[in-house]
Length: 358
Image (cartoon, rainbow, N blue to C red):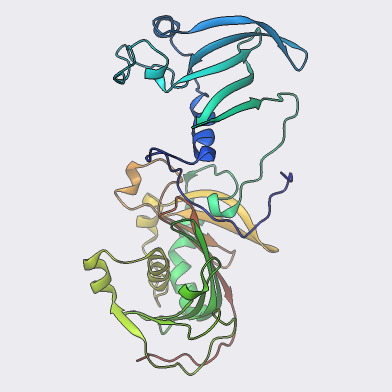
């Protein structure tokens, strides 16, 4: 793969390990993370399994010992329940048998595993060819260093909704990873003061799902594109034949989508008054400094009481603020496990947006 991954165009989906015939790539990814741990595994528990030393060998010029060991290393005295033909100490009862090539320091140099039916795999670990990683935005972007906000940052956050209200207009671009692993993008306009979004949404894998979206503080209206893909330039004034739902209806029916969640969250982020700086300082976290184009921004989260019980940096929403305290990006976790990015560029003028559609 290229050292610098493409910045956009990514699809995101959870690992699919529940089904009997899970995708081989999913099995490989899950297994690669499973065989790393911050603490040594228990040699006593491993001795009770049908592990075997096979032979001495070489891997890329390094002397190794080859072992046959478990795919899932035991962490408790009681092993997983064996299958009908497996004894408790068998490797089958521990996820199957895997070949491990270990050097004198216990470092893995090569392994062999069965990823699926009739799909053996050999993985080489080239430990002298380290490559720095660049995380993509759909998976959260750069590493965070979460900490409590200081007085200046809390003051900036307390002004965010008022500054958004005063900025009033923004052009909008949305990148949304959606189930079952598709990508949707949108563009349009936002009027902070009137609480109106107007977007054209394009599904990159199925254009029959392309829609126009109009939202207000009362609810969301959707209209399918008549022919072809959603246009980059929205038709104004609006067309008829919209399907409208109130926010309360969507919430009560639990049918609200990831698209509607991030749009609703954004609509709440404008007010002509300042928020309580003391309350914000007690709850907000600074995640990192970043850039949007040439503009420096601070990335924050405002976890609610439930999210405060989770790990730092895992709240459902992230707020990217510029030095003026205006929101430039809102990130929202989606059902895929990835992050949607709603980019907002302040502008002095947008088309006249309708207050409602029918």
